[in-house]
Length: 206
Image (cartoon, rainbow, N blue to C red):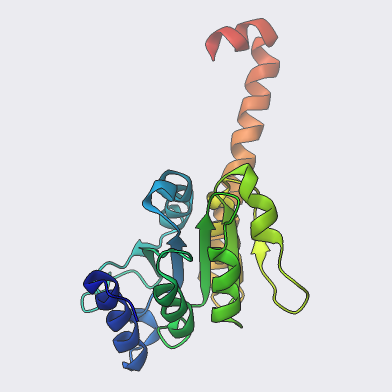
């Protein structure tokens, strides 16, 4: 049992939330966890993608945001706080989570893998925070699935999480379509500008 009062408080929070009967629109849809706050700059891409698609961050379970779709964010270390990791993953379904994004760095980036095992069958999308973390994150055995993105691509991890949710929520599918249309418009306008100005003028304008 942990001797940290702060960790125990989080464990108690997760367990109490798992015991509460809340409507779906008051529980977080996506969970973002990382092994250390030093991973936050890399994992911030997931925050950017979710907020860009209309999600709001839930920071107080008793006062959820007005947005229908929300996410939560925590630091959970597989090596330093294994009990916290176990309770986070073990209560995820009862707390209303539908997808978890888990990021970790170093050569022993075990948080995504372990969270995927504990939270099963909730899908977990792993984010290797560094290139040296890739092998650790994707090295799951058959029967213990973990979806993973390339090193540092937490933005893509969040897009994948919303893709999963969109199968049950057509409004999210529409938001994804709008986002993708915006990417196409951007490429089209840049291509047209390059053609009209020519390479040298375009490079100077940039």
